[in-house]
Each structure stands twice: as structure tokens, then as C-alpha cells.
Amino acid sequence: MTRALVAAALFSTVGLLACSKEQPAAPPAPAPAPAATAPAATAPHDGAADSGKPKMVANPDGLSLADRIAKRQAAEKKLADQLAVEENKRLLAYDKTKLPLHKQVFADIQKYRAAYAHAKTKSDVEKIRAKQQKAIEATGKKMATIDPKGGNSNIVTDYDVMLNALANDYPDALEASFDGDKKPLEEQSAELDKRQKKVADWLAQVKAAKK
Image (cartoon, rainbow, N blue to C red; front, side, top):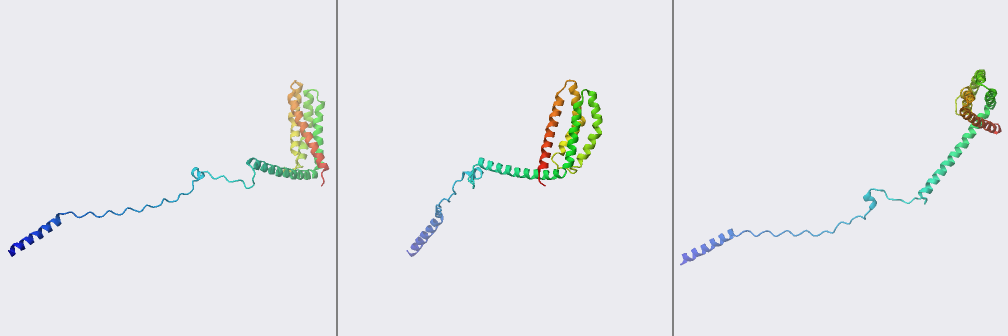
């Protein structure tokens, strides 16, 4: 009887152990879900930043673009006028120191031009041209002594143009006029008239200028 009870107890114990080995382990408990986080604050929307264009800034002086351009142009003109006045004074002061030479050169130029007024034929023109050639060259050398370095006299360039015209283009145009072509002479005469007036007006200013 006792053996039977012991055997039954052993059988029961072995059965329980076998059952415990065959049953699968319980799955682990699922990890808790992460806590919801608040969305990050976003910077205010800036259309200028998205487009890559700089922001418009109000003009500190309160002027419109057109007004600012007009103001700048007025300032530039004022400066240019001041510089022109100063340059005019400088040229007047220089030419005043050379006034006797100016008078001689200008008188020669007027004399050379007046000589052609007596020409009636091409032959007359050529005679006058030949007669005045050396005199014109001498006047050119005298003219060069007025402003040797350049940029100091207001009318030396005009002298140079007129002397060259009287030695070449003017007599050529005069001869052409005898053949009926009047246009070259009209152009040469207009150019000489314009430069002679400029020289005469300038020399009057030089004479009146104070030292």
C-alpha cells in the first residue's frame, strides 16, 4: 500500500514536470508607446526669404526714386558749373599773359584771309597761296610759342585750324567756286567765321579780365 502511494506520487510529479516543459514561455509585455511630443514652433513665414529677394527698406530721406535722381543730377550740374567757372578763370589768366602774341597771330590770320578776296581767277588764287605760304608758316611758329605745352590757352587750337585752312582747304574751295561748285567755299567760310568770332570774343574777355 505504501509503495503504491509512493509510486503514484512520483508519477504525478513527473507528469507535472513534463507539462511545465512543453508549455511555451509567456511572451514579453509590449514596450510602452512613446509619449506624444508637442510640435516644434515654426518661424513666421517670410515671403522675401523664400524668394531670395531682399526686403524693401523705406528711404531714410523720404524722397521718391525720381526725386533722388533729380537731386543727384542737380548736384552734379552745380559741381560741373563750378568747375567750368574755375577753368574759365584759369584760361583767362593764362591768355592775358600772352595777349600781345594773340593780337599778332589773330591779325595775321585776318590779313591772310582778306588777301583771297582779291582773287578773280584760279590763277589769282595760286599766286596768293604761293605768296602767303612762308608767312603762314612763320605765323604758325609764333602761335606755337603761346602755349608750348598745350591745355593753357583757350584759342590756340582755333588759330591752328584757321592757318591750315587758309594754306590749303580755303584756296581749294575758292578755286572750286570759279567752276560753279559753291558748297565747299560756303562750308570753309562758315567755319572761319565761327572761329574768328570765338577768338574775337575771347580776346575781348581777356583784355577786360583783371590780373
